[in-house]
Length: 304
Image 1 (cartoon, rainbow, N blue to C red):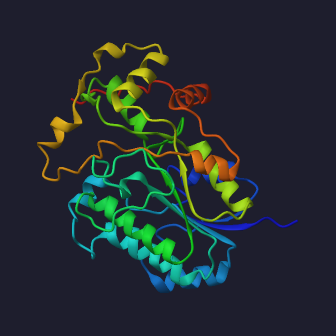
Image 2 (cartoon, helix red, strand yellow):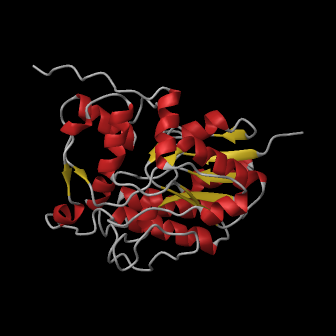
């Protein structure tokens, strides 16, 4: 029996590369820069026509939230071109509903006007008034996907035990901890983390069951301070040196008062019911990461 052919954009990234590693049941096509440019409609059309995939999973995205803020309002900027125009190019080239867009809880404002954690049925706002520019680009991409009958998988702070190219939320914090550069962590910001191995499982289930709709992959909510101090404690280090601070106070100092969602997160009840699966609690995710080899990184060399 032949394997299902899945075209994966962003396959060399933090999340996409792990999906490729784990989902061996699929026949993957993994185009990437510089040979494949998502913002070039003709290049996308040629590739899709040549490969004729049964499914497309779009991990490719401009994810630097701070850099995206510098492009706010610019639909000619790279964030918009990759996150919105690029998605549109894929949808124009792939005449099938077997399309999965990887998205984020930042398509919602994360404030008291529409607080999280969000379930799969909640509709993102049709205005960028309370979103970051990154969140708005992902919001508009979701709209395109829904209008074309595709599916959305939202994730938040994806984590894995090792990835040399890019630190994730936990490993980035651990690096700052060992280098003595840990900044105070928010103790009043509601977040989730998504175990990348479970993201892979969720995607595999969607494809194998030919499911359609909006899906979530995350865990229960925590705060940055609670999460990182727990990780440090579990690794046998001293978490008492980590200080806490308020996201509400921090946002008062920012040009964009919506830079960080305060009440974010994703509920997974409907996803678990529809796909017959379970997503781990954040504590269990941390324990599984440590079991896979997560540890304190080496201290950076002293700069002279």
